[in-house]
Image (cartoon, rainbow, N blue to C red; front, side, top):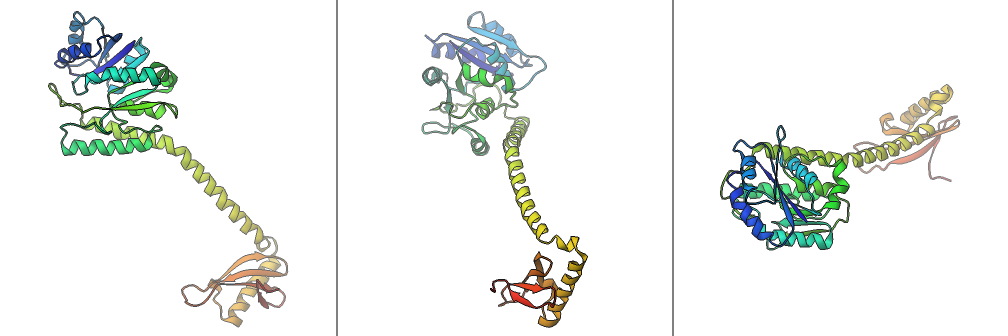
Length: 329
């Protein structure tokens, strides 16, 4: 059986238009229609209860004190009895005739079937440039974050195998209006996903819910997913760099340990630096220690800012301050 969940808010005018289309599209498919209304000021829940008389497959949930499409869908899923769970909007912008194909796809592949605007044959319809740009930008960001390869992870029209949802339900706490994106972020890798093209239709009655608050919630959701997904990787990178630099620093410190442990070696090293400066004309600031032992030091002479002068590695004896190249036998 199919359980079709329709989240609503101020859609009292849309339901009498939508329901006859649904019953025609679902003819021959055992189904239930669950309307989850967020206590709409226009009385959508009341209109849905009135329509139960002529449409007995309808169930109505009136939520008080809660808001949000995603959480409304989850409430509908938890009440559903079907083996296949589906979601669509009440405003008529989703093509009800595709429901049969979505259901058949999930029955065969036991995964997720998505009505997609962004594959060949699909379209956003009559959207203006601003909304098209926002949708495309959001889609690119969510596609980058998704575990599964999907062209339209923000579609609000899809079907999913019930067993898949039940696997993630205990840790599934979505926010905002993009329920499919939240699902795709938690479904296991390798989950079968099929996209079916559709054209987003214009709304016939009512007003769009794409407010600034909806966009803000979506942005917050993206940030939450991004940091949740990449924070662990960032810590791994930090720890690798920390231990790499720590190892290099520790080796360098070990090679120079006598400067701290032996005051005599420390004093002779100072004198060696001064001797090289006096006899060779090398600036002390151009000299850097690499290794120190009881009888000699090893250092690099690297003239800063002067051309045609190569870096030299030299060994200096601490008894008479004579030096030889490091590669001398």
